Length: 177
Image (cartoon, rainbow, N blue to C red; front, side, top):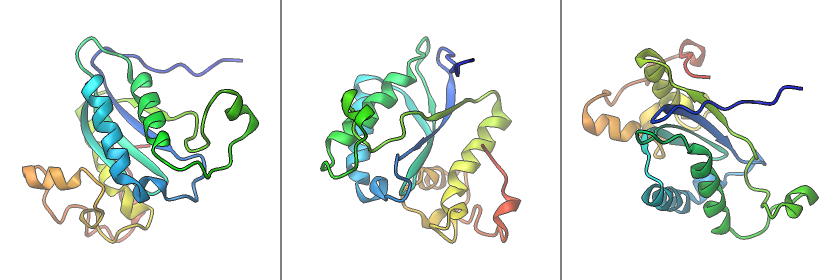
């Protein structure tokens, strides 16, 4: 049986999807301050650039660019997951296998990563991230969702405030995954 091989490109740019173990929970938005603080602390010790991000109740998407020569996004995600989990009360169901490994039951063990290959791939994934709250029914327009880097893009003038607001059918916006 073949095992999954992750892409390790020094200084690469990657798209990630990271999910809660229980997708019916809303921990990420309920505790968004703790999540942001945990990410900040990890970035202080293990720098990386967050190109784009959206935090939804049960999962998040992000694009990161690692420093030149660095390939270690797995350590960063492990630290973010562990740091966030430590800040939450222990109320989740924890399986015997997780207990045996000293894990909480908050996050799915794995995450999805995709190496961004070129400018068109990058733009497609940024658009996917910013439209995701609408896709999942959390907002009528992308700018309505407060936990999105779209607000930074609008402030910087790289995306107009009404971006994505006039997509009548979500299937028209096919980006990313």
